[in-house]
Length: 497
Image 1 (cartoon, rainbow, N blue to C red):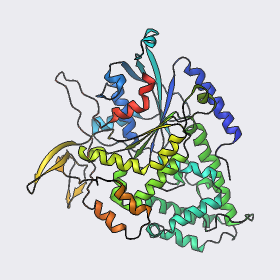
Image 2 (image 1 turned 30 degrees about the horizontal axis):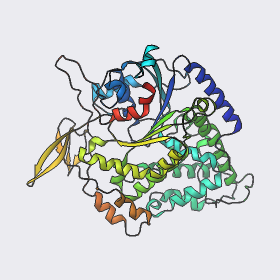
Image 3 (image 1 turned 180 degrees about the horizontal axis):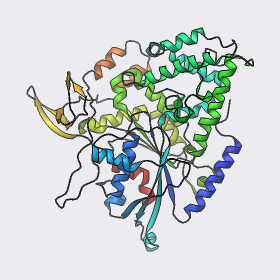
Image 4 (image 1 turned 90 degrees about the vertical axis):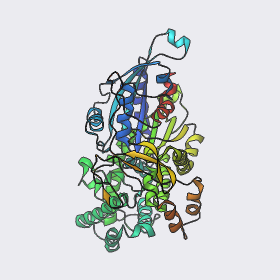
């Protein structure tokens, strides 16, 4: 088994932490990681966070802003020259100017925001105004699923991946890959054509799993779905073979040896640099979770999401923050799990969405708390695209949401043009979230129908970003949200006290 980090890597991390600690003596910094699986809303969250801080948004639960102790926030030059800058200006123009959702996260990016504030402490106020560099690190959540691979050899990875592909709810999606797998002999001579066919079929299977119909989350290797400039390289041209986890030694020159070599190259050139250069340097983390998409897709998507979130957190380095630990081995001392798109539901369902999310991340959260990290869960919408209303239907008052669906969205065969506002009742989440998981914990015998019936009446449309409100004095307000201020208070509040 390969250790997650080698002694040499830990030494490099300690040296980087020492350099960072020296610069923090003048202005302290906080590195906040922002991640989530596909379409969870990472880009929207970051854009809304910066827009509300810079433009003085409505943040009543964020104590530094509510108490008027935060005197300003401004963007700063990129601190890491080798990391792409998060394109805040274009993203906010898409949201505010064009009223379209910005493009999703495809690579690691970073943005530095400097917050100026007055301390709540009398003694610290006498020392002068405070400043904090907030470094926002945006990265695809799929890449997190790669980190556990560092502790797995090729045989273990293959055994797990093939077993998942053969599960009843995946086998039909993985049909082409399983056909190629059946024809591939791991002991045969290495062949570039065979490797390409297997890799292509495996990548197509992973991509199909991520589609809205299935909404599955356990899809390592993550870079297969977002290859970037490594597309077509040998390090991304491999696939799991049908070999047991305890397979014996590999004979040189075989297909298995070829795949194994490329798997190790993937870990060396793709996974380890991400861990060393970005992930291991985080102080705090928010994980955005699209629970509603999983609920729409059914019980297997829910179970898959629960497993993925547990795997994701197993790669974290949680722990209690101290001056010494920030130098020797940086720890993530606060983790926030946020169920996104709360504006797709009436506020009466927000508590239920939060309870379902807590249940999904329970095992992962308990593990982080045991190691000293603070963990919180909330339902939020970084940008609120709807408003609430009450509509009368068949003599009954129903809680509804109002908004303009994106062009092409449809309900009951009626498609919308993007300019028509509608009122809709999205349905109610169950009051007791445990009812969703009892069947999952006891297996899937006769559970598909009950769970599907539970959510058969739920409908979630994609709405256009909102038009910004304007005050009587003509000032344009910041992007509206649901509980973004609560997220900021948990993630930053103590550092601005």
